Each structure stands twice: as C-alpha cells, then as structure tokens.
Image 1 (cartoon, rainbow, N blue to C red):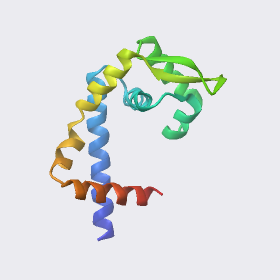
Image 2 (image 1 turned 180 degrees about the horizontal axis):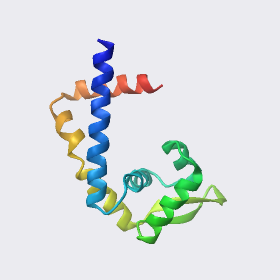
Image 3 (image 1 turned 90 degrees about the vertical axis):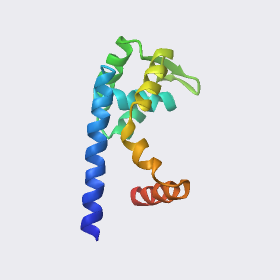
Image 4 (image 1 turned 180 degrees about the vertical axis):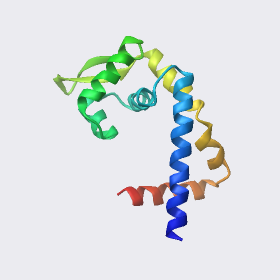
Length: 132
C-alpha cells in the first residue's frame, strides 16, 4: 500500500510540474518566474523569504525578480514595517498575469472537481500533516 501511495504522489507531482511549466510558457514565463509571481500575487515579500519558500539561494531569486521587474510584472518597494528591507510585489499587470496563469492550470481543478468539499478538506488536511 505504501509503495502504491508513493507512486501515486510521484505521478501527481510529475503531472503538476509538466502542467505548470506548460502554463508558464504560455505566458512567456519560466516555471520559477511563474511560481514567484504567483507567490507575490498572494502577498508581497522580501526576497530572502521567497528563497526560503523555493528552497534556493537568494541570488537566484534576485535574478528571477530582476527578469520579472524588467517585464513590468514585479516591483521592489520598501517594507512599511522596516524600510531597510525591500519587498518584491506584483504590479497591476503582474497580478493580472498571475490570475490568468492560475486560471490556465486545469490539472488540479479538473480532478479535484470530482471530489466533494469534504473530501477536498480531508485531502488538504492529510497533505498538511504529511508536510508538517
């Protein structure tokens, strides 16, 4: 049973990555750029926190944010709580692009639509428990 569950999780992850890369490319973004833009559309954050969430070096995030900024999708602004810190935040166009990107991710929406609200809640809670 455990092996089957691990295999199924692997299949879900692989399919998610494939779909995510395809959706990102349709918006002329790399997968990493799309992930950062989606994170920032939920909440502006310092680049160090982006790096922690992506599990990568802050210098990598700087390059990603630089490219998004060049395209007018992201801007850097002072953190109101600590003006020494710069937050990366989506521009209006960045927010619209993130919304279109999320709308184009059919992979999760279609299979999850077959689950009841209660089943989705149970799935969410189990996944959170696995990641805790």
